[in-house]
Amino acid sequence: MTVEQHRSRTPVGRDAAAGTVDVATALEAVIPADLLAEVDPALWGRTVVQLAQGLATHPTDVGRVVAGHAALAARIGSATVARVLGSDAEGPVPVEKDGRFRDPTWEENPVYWAVRQQYLAVVQTLHDLVGAAGLDESSRERAELLMDVLGSVLSPTNLLPGNPSALKRAFETGGSSVLAGARQMLDDLATNQGRPQQVDRSSLRVGKELAATPGKVVYRNRLMELIQFEPQTDEVHEIPILVSPPWINKYYIMDLAPGRSLLEWAVQHGHTVFVISYRDPDESMADVGLDDYLELGNLAALDVVQDITGAEKVNLVGLCLGGLMATIASAMLHARGQEHRLNSLTLTNTLLDYSDPGPVSSFVDPEIVDRLERKMAKTGYLPADSMAGTFDLLRANDLIFNYVGPNWLEGKAPPAFDILAWNADSTRMPAKMHAFYLRHFYLMNELARGELELLGEHLSLKSVTNDTFIVAAINDHIAPWRTSFQSTTLLGGDVTFTLSNGGHIAGVVNPPGKKAKYWIGTVGGDSAPDADTWMQRATEVGASWWEPWRDWMGERGGGMRQPPPTGSDAYPPLQDAPGSYVLGTG
Image (cartoon, rainbow, N blue to C red; front, side, top):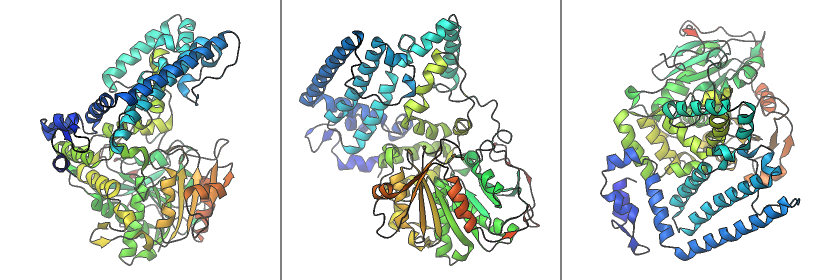
């Protein structure tokens, strides 16, 4: 739906249902569409106006919220007095785990305890006000997210007097930490879009400390490079693995620091592994679409893998959107009568059904997509920081404000952490590709509905009858695990479903260790009609999902053989891994 179509549904400046003036629509009616696309692509401005108007036109409901907050504040006051007198009185507002309040002073000191309680009460009230504004569902979700961000901004930990950790460090350093933090803040305001740096990348270099698994680039086209990793065992399984990473990120999330690399893990367990490394799009790729990514990505890579290894079949592994692309490629092979080329499919943190995509849906609305298309038309791509900023806002406490205290108030250098280094190494999105993806998956859900057509073929998920290993993460906010579970009913083959601890990235970067655990259980038939029933019956295991996947993949890897050569006559090695595309030099 375009902006013009939306405006045609509702009389300009008037809410037809309520019979009142719709201030947001009236304002937007006099602003050029291209300007709206540039200054408010995510509809934040509209949301603010709608929220303000909703609060103004629902005074009774707002009054109840305000009265409720006053009563809550009074209860906090009473509990604080009790604590001053030596009691262990519980606060009326529940306290959840939050890194900003990890200092024990927040629990031990009655004044700071009260400040935290009052802050949490304000955050709760902000969300209650959204409920009182009478917004439609889409606007309400954006307003809730806006209040999450506003609540993070209002946190007492963002100011020196309200941050006991920072105050302690200031006394310990004679105030030098405050000066160091101020310098970091000024630098971030000037160079990092006003946000604190999440990571120190100086000691985490791609090709050195990251993406360090030895290998060669054996193929390159205008869209991707294909890397073949060198064998690390005397014998390897006959059936190779082709890894399909997300096109919106760089591939090395699956090849982080040694010991934390899933690709290294597979190589060390006797597999011949290839991975696609996509080029970072620029204006020259404006007209590159999903069909190009399919044909020049997974399908082209499959040809090269089979030529080099001589294998009749390939095990396909995908992460996030790379899992979506791997599934589409699998369905395409079946549509073309080439299903014999695919042996198995592994999907990690992947959505195939977009009917309930979680918090991301706040940023995928017909009008938002229309504005993004207008915005991308000027450059030919979506800037890298746009996508990264969106994901940061979904977890603003963890990914933005959690660093304000340590970086800006305590003067500490950001950590050198491989996942955060990868997260900061963002990529752009080709205009045609990104618009197609948002419309045909998020808005129309065509793949799950059996309506997607690419390269002249109608694609059916039920036609994918290969064995599939699905991994989801219990705290994933980008690919919610319950939605990921729906894939078990969409695919036509035998499916193993595993639920990892962690979030969207940590759930995948989950090497064997003390903190790793997963749940595994039966799927298919009537044994697991929904995700929650599956969870009730699943078995919890104190280990990494990498281990059952190793065993599962080993059973589907074929017999053992001498490692194949690196490259072939048709596809000789071009350069050492990680190649040039991941570095932006090709």
